Amino acid sequence: MSKRDFYEVLGVDKGASDEEIKKAYRKLARQYHPDVNKATDAEDKFKEAKEAYETVSDPNKRATYDRYGHVDPNQGMGGGQGDMGGFGDIFDMFFGGGGGGSRRNPNAPQRGSDLQYSMTIDFKEAVFGKELDLTIPRTEDCGNCHGNGAKPGTKPETCSTCKGTGQQEVIQNTAFGRIVNRRVCSSCNGQGTIIKEKCGECHGSGKVKKQRQIHVKIPAGVDEGAQLRVSGEGEAGTRGGPPGDLYVVIRVKPHEFFDREGDDIYCEIPLTFAQAALGDDIEIPTLTEKVKLKIPAGTQTNTYFRLKGKGVPRLRGYGQGDQHVKVTVVTPTSMSEDQKELLREFANQSGESTHAQQKSIFERFKKAFLGD
Image 1 (cartoon, rainbow, N blue to C red):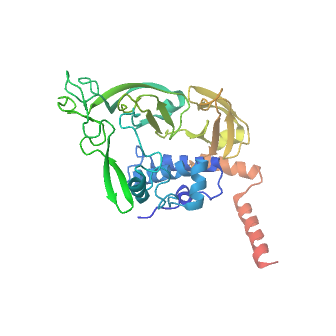
Image 2 (cartoon, rainbow, N blue to C red; image 1 turned 180 degrees about the vertical axis):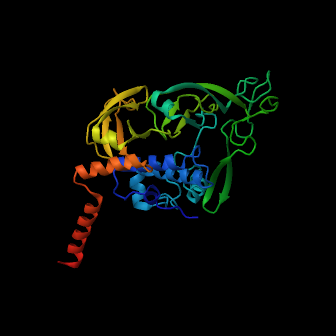
Image 3 (cartoon, helix red, strand yellow; image 1 turned 60 degrees about the vertical axis):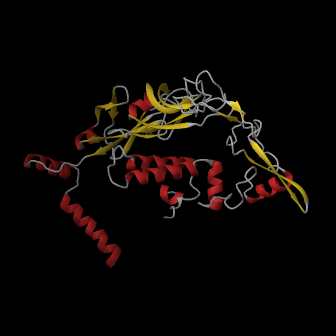
């Protein structure tokens, strides 16, 4: 199944700004988040939106995508320098090596792999931060053999076939002369050492799987898709190499009342006709408390008010964003006869008789489309 265009997935134009792309992704993330949307295709749509956002929000990835689309520009080119495909065999045959850079010391220390852990937190936990312990499955050096794979009291021995180099040389005499071909040692599989008595705990691998508890501090102000790097908490390295890192990917549950855009939050408050017409002092919930908001007389529906500094703490900086309050005038759906009579009286005193208004609208319509 072919992938959809990433801009189509996000619902933005190809020339969309970073802010437009971010806003579109947040909307889709809230809509299809697996924790709130239980539809069978919600998780797939969430992952599709996340992949699209990760590509077009990165300037380098976006430039490559705009030029090549979903096609890997390196595909068919042998993987670039260091991975020469069939040409590597030719270099091996005639020059005894991989054309520079392919010879590697099998006993050199190697860094461990990075790990990724996804976790879902509440809206307010993302706003104010949180500290918690995560249980992460990862490979570690075997404590029984200290990572060398050999039975305690023994140690790995240097391979007698390759003398510890991890490579075998096969010499061929041809019409062109003597050809030296280097291959991975078949006796030690390129390790340079052989374990005759294996450790009973790790069975000679030098590594064991363990559940490790790691303390993580989530800073205030993180948002959907943020990645936290915990240095040195990834997989164990090989032959004394350093461990990899742990990357914690944050997912944020939507809030039932607040929406978030960057460091600002938004909410919607209903007003009665009387409150909008006459004005009122109302209580507005914020992230930390309830505050008074003065509604001026004559406020129209869909008017926004700003509560400065009542938004999200800025992740990389000082201060907080703002809270934006949208007021919506609610029209009553059922009224008593007394209430209806009062409204009719109000309309009459305002010169807004409903019958007269309807007639006036009809007359303007007739003039515009039917002529005098």
